[in-house]
Length: 79
Image (cartoon, rainbow, N blue to C red; front, side, top):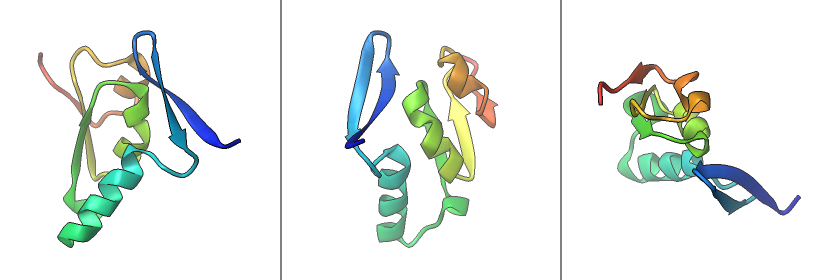
C-alpha cells in the first residue's frame, strides 16, 4: 500500500510513491507554466503512461506501444 507498481517496459517495473505518477508530474509542470490539461499533449509507449494520457487533452502512443496504451490513445504515430 506504500507504492504503485507499474509496467515500465519489457521486464521492467517502476515503483512510485502512492499518489505520484507521470500524470502528476505533467500536471505540476503545466501548473508552473500556467497551463491546464486542456493545453497539453502526452506522448508515450507503455502502461505507465496511461494516467498521463487520462490527464492530457490528447494522448499520442508510439506505433510500437504496449497494447494497453494503444487501447486508450487518441492517436498513434506511423513509426
